[in-house]
Amino acid sequence: MNEKYLQPMLREGSLRDKTVVVTGGGSGLGKSMAEMLLRLGARVAICSRNEEKLKKAVADLHELTGNPDIMYAVCDVRDYDGVEQALEQIREHFGSFNALINNAAGNFVSPTERLSAHAFDVIIDIVLRGTKNVTLASGKYWIKEQIRPVSVVNIVTTYAFTGSGYVVPSAASKAGVLAMTRSLAVEWAKYGMRFNAVAPGPFPTKGAWDRLLPGDLRQKFDPAKRVPLGRVGAHAELANLVSYLLSEYAAYINGEVITIDGGEWLKGAGQFNAFDQVSGHQWDMLEQMIRKAKKK
Image (cartoon, rainbow, N blue to C red; front, side, top):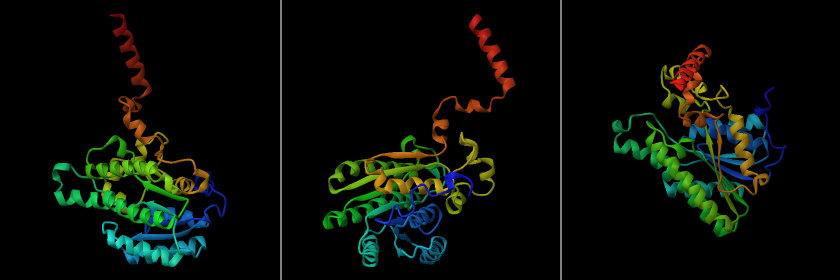
């Protein structure tokens, strides 16, 4: 690994005091974040609905990191009672937990008028209700048992604050998660809890990208072309940021949303950013036209 950004940012053992629950931890970004946490000495519990995927992930993560403090709990975040049961399993295994990454999500691209009410609800239930369920069940436990310090990181998206067509259920749900993050950062700080969010840009994961950019759409709408830095994100970059926010090095960061997207949303936000497609010759012609217009 020559690129610095692929290496762990924190010192070895920096998260030995953390027991972290990662929802959506059986694959993709959740699994990559779990790997980084384990490398830094944390105890990690990964959760998702698919037990076979979780079993494989635990075996992979143990082999990759050498850290045996990894377990799984089968959990559908849409079911509050099931969430409580999964968290109880985690407490029985590790004794307690003091950090949470709300990463479970669902999304697909569609014109909104093509969506059924059920399809819209599926995304809301996973993203917004699921995050609420895990956060509320965890928070009640932390308050009752006076567990502190506690750190929560919610994975949102840049269109949580800009909105976006064709992913309206996800945009609405992620915006709700962001509002909940900021609200609880204020309300529950008195219990020793910090709440922050991370808004990733394009980070390749097979499951999400197959749903969002199926077939030849990935070539037609190459996400790297929308990023000023000219590339998509590496999983380790996101994992490093989240690990830092969970750590006590970030003890004074609370209620923040940090964007990690290579400048993608800023490029899309500017009214004239598409002019980066204009060639040098075309700019010469445009300058001449502008000068002539000024003389009139």
